[in-house]
Image (cartoon, rainbow over all chains, first blue to last red; front, side, top):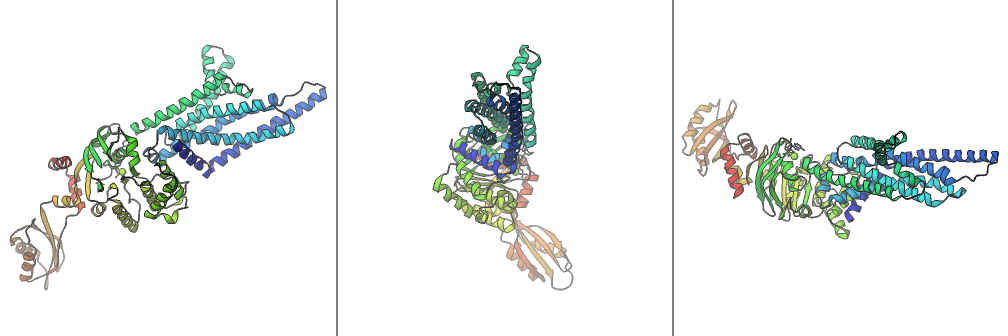
Length: 255
Length: 329
Ligand SMILES: Nc1ncnc2c1ncn2[C@@H]1O[C@H](COP(=O)(O)OP(=O)(O)OP(=O)(O)O)[C@@H](O)[C@H]1O
Ligand SMILES: [Mg+2]
């Protein structure tokens, strides 16, 4: 446990010592800020038009602003995951520092958990930036905080899953760029799988859709915790880390 | 302290290390010598539990590298071929990080980090980023990293690579001073390094053990003869080497005599004699009595370099048998 924390601290140091963390934070904040003010602007105009037309259906901040924004975050997150995980193992393999880790009295799992945790913390920092925007809604409106919290839980779970996947892919190569590109490809695949159920309701399409990470986020976005979604993400995290461990083992047998 | 028995490593297709056996006693410094691609790094990686052996066994500090890697890892300090440093870290932070990985904490950690900094003379770059250090300093930080937790066994892969001559000497002295408390195995292809630093030498070539012996024995074993180098000059005029050769060969106990270098007035001869025959006095007397001048007379100790070349270029069956016999002993 202590070793996991040592590794995690070292990884966080590496993220924040290089421009990568700040670059990701800035980009994420800009992109999300853009979405946020767009959604808000739309919401305000919509509201004014409804008043002009004399309609009195109460508008719901949660449904109209927060929910679409959360699902935007979940998609934008897909593009940031590879940039977070690509260096985790590839960099250590390239520079030879993996020799230090492996010849130190550590369990593989401690190394893997430490690295994954650091990636998750950086991802949580990105999410924190989006949360800052939402505080505006609480200052000027009266949204329900519970669905928002559930949404963030979903984002963390989804992030944890994809980060575990990225960590695994990073053990497969010495080249960060390859690790990043492969992770990006896989993330993209997992996203578009959902589309197959749009035009076809055959079993295979439903099975494919089941593996779409995004479709499991829908319920979280509505503020509902469905156990099947939680199970999906937790299983994904477990499998991702499990394969990372296997890959680390075979790394020694192969190299 | 280190026992290696029939250790073998096969990479896809090629055998990098082929059934090598040797052992290292506690407190000794052993030089692991071989040309490029001999399998030094591969062997060290197996000893440090980085790579599993394909066959054979190795134990370090009493623990088998396959059965109890965790116990082995606790007791070794390892400097890989390229120092395992993180460019974005500062020197002390890095040494603290490594110390923690090796199980140090609190005041003990700080004490050991300060000690390692001082021992490896990196105190003046304590707060510099490792990525901005020169190659030599990185190497020193790598060495500091290996000794930070005071391990029983030090495994150093080419510890002096990339250092300047002054640093090389300091590093060798450092390594020598570490022996006794630590058992050290270091790889190199620089022969004087082994002659100066190590007590014992293990020579491998193309994955096979060529010889394992003490440095002194190896020098003597290479040839059963002693040779003497003499520079002889004519008192006046040109020196004809022929009569000198014939005169020297007549002395009893002298074997082959050859001309190494010749100039107008003087020539350098190499005189071989059986070991234990004290011929130098006779040689000097003969030269002077025959009317020549003797400018120099010295024993030509066979350098390890010659031994090394001889052993690695012509690994005849006889020598191989010799080597295995000794490794078993
Ligand atoms: N990962 C690998 N895959 C396949 N072959 C390898 C691998 N690593 C090393 N080898 C081969 O194993 C042999 C021994 O290599 P090794 O690195 O142990 O040599 P070395 O004695 O350390 O050489 P040097 O003095 O150049 O460092 C070489 O022929 C090398 O090509
Ligand atoms: Mg090597």
